[in-house]
Image (cartoon, rainbow, N blue to C red; front, side):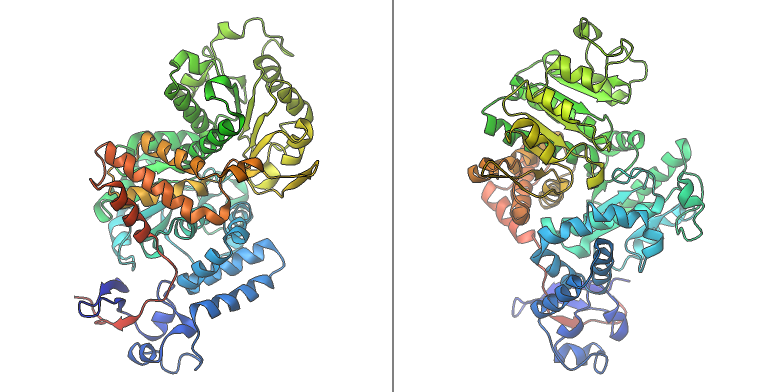
Length: 575
């Protein structure tokens, strides 16, 4: 049963919720609970009289009280648990607090702390959020979706838990990721929390630690593969289409093979995108666009080494390739400038182990003839850096220290302002620290990382590394796609979003070495991305035919601000 519907009074024009629950049930509904902020009239009409203390608070005073409690927590995991509990009690209050302290709290509700939380999720679980789809209940997917109490579902974030951050297979303990992503959609993008749904496709796990843990709460079976797995994904997608037509589906933290397959199979059938492939690639591209502006260079003037050819690395390479081609290069010319390195070393076109998405990113064997190699049977990262003479070094490997002092020093020999992007997270998985880059480049390196790092003073200058966080792109993609009523998420829409992010970086920020906007401006960045995405959808004939000014106004109006609307009692049984 739906618990409320947003309505407008035709006489006064007042927005209000018509509420279909009463008393304790209302207080236990995280979308609706105002706690001490219920007015005297609401307390009487909604069965709350006597269930609350007499004092009446504002949302602002509640947020102040909640922040004091948050500050009393001494460990990040305890802060995560506290914020999760607050979200379970009152979403408007949770999002008010989060928006007021976004820079401080994003590392708690998402990377890096969410990784620590996912590792222990079955041990710290208080309440369940979202929906868990398993092989045991997939046949009931329509009933599951129809039982959701939210008035509507417009945005879904789904994971199967196989590749959670850099932590691997965490089964349904990986649900912390969709929950966190939904929180960021709301706080950073302004999507209303009542239309967002996190989902876990719990198809088992191959993690022996979880299978042997008596407290593990997931589907305690080896992970489904092949036709059985694909059948569950297909039934899930069809269930989404039947019950939530027009909803945006974001694929999140799937294994590499299934991620590319799901994206290719469903991107033309439903409004969907993969944040690990497309979102990471788009955010990295934004940082590179800014770096080119700082260097007064073009993509075709640079040489890119990308290490780690999983979803993120492949997505980054695909975006770099798209920009090189936009600058007028042919496929072969673009290929010569991107050096993709994976576990087997530099990817070459005659490698029998190549995966399909990697093939356009390989070097021709003939192009590396004559390279001086440490091992004639393998072209490792040191060989690539020495022979290819990169100006841009990007890592998405989850191998801490991979970019050694020697690698950084060698890269610095080939350009005055090397670009180093050590993008693995959590923090302890980062390929190198910003400090190491600045020491190797006399403070001239342009740095982006996957997790936040503190600034550093170098020769009287304050240097900052940008956190290359997908938070800059995915809320705007989601908001823009939904507001424009797009039927698909295209590469052109995502590219437009990347350019909008980079354009938001000011000259003053560039002088400090920032490649991405500051986190305090994230909602404004998301609005700009959403507008750019909506315009690209319109130009492709996939979105609403409205002019730029109207589109911008619709996007701004769609951005929800945490607040308490008035409540009016509705019939206990909905018509």
